[in-house]
Amino acid sequence: METIIEQLPPDLIGFLMVAIFSLLIGLEQRRRYLSYGGETLFGTDRTFTLIGILGYVLYIISPSNLIPFTAGGGVLAILLCIYYFQKMQLQQKFGMTSIIAALITYCLAPLVFMPAHWLALLVVVTVLVLLEIKENLLKITKEFNNDEFITLAKFLVVAGVVLPLLPDRPVSAVINISPYQFWLAIVVVSGISYFSYLLRKFVFPDTGILLTGVLGGLYSSTATTVILARKSKEELSVNRVVAAMFLALAMMYLRIFALALFFDRDIGIRLIPSFAILTILSVVIALYYIKMRKEDVQTGRLNEKLDVNSHRNPLEFKTSLLFGGLFVFFAVLTGFVINQYGGGGVKVLSFIVGVTDIDPFILNLLQGKWNIDAGVITIAIVNASTSNNVLKMFYALSLGSKALRKEIAVSFGIIIAAGIAAAFI
Picture: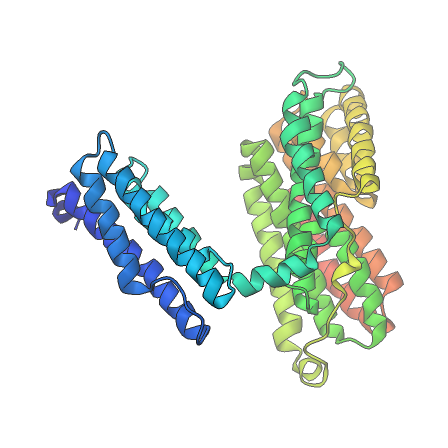
């Protein structure tokens, strides 16, 4: 197939790409025309295909100066303007989506001849998606209030303005972390949490128990465990609550693994065996409570809904301030422990930090240029996650329903023992 494609003239390949892409956009217009009933739209499959071919012909005539292509685009724009004003007068409709799509279709010819062939495909896919998701965008817009825009602006300022301005030099010998590394940690963790927040609020607003575990694990598996434990007192399905907790646990391992790969690829690779086992084990336990405990699945309510606002916005000032304070604290504490006790002290410290947010500690280990072996850092990360699981078990036992206690003790006992074994191995 590659040999056949190489033997085809580039102009023929370009023509076929333009014709196919234009036809796809036109077919989408046809579908919209049929869906909207009597509303008149500018062109459908044949019209858009011919517009794409027109752009290709005028471009290929003189690709060096683009005079024919530019003139043809001007004529097309005039015709589209005439159509738009007639539409406003006769139908009182002011949308320009079809007109903009037609102009983009006309411009496909130069794109297919660019060295980056994927760009033309990306443009077509984006156009098709935007033409299709009008109703979904309208629904999201209704949910996107002033606070959401302010939150988005905060994240853009934090990631795109403040971060590049910070120096990338360690503050001192005591704090072996630069301001740039400190802020980058906040940006990455906040970005993951913010992504989870947006998914819960706009994509999955009616989040069920199991999906709460998956999305909540991206934000904070500890907070998700606390929420699920409290909700278990409201006569929700016991087995599905436990399953959701362990889905959150699996997402915690994946989140930490992603952070390790981002900040220190070598540590991330070293974590693969341990975290793969722990993630799979967490999923297996969750599946057991979903599939095997049939008596609860049959009698329990399968579509329990949890409030999507149970998790607060991750970009709140108090949240960022707390994370930053913990990050600096663990930078100083980790440096002191390493200087005084070496790698053995870090392993012990990793068990202690499990009673707090472990992300600042882990990010300090990944970013700091500590004089300890990479294997010690890997073990410390596994220990910290295991210690944090002990804290989650305590929360679940103390805050959850009495019907949960046996399942929680057994299930968390298994994952904690597996974590300790993974660290020793």
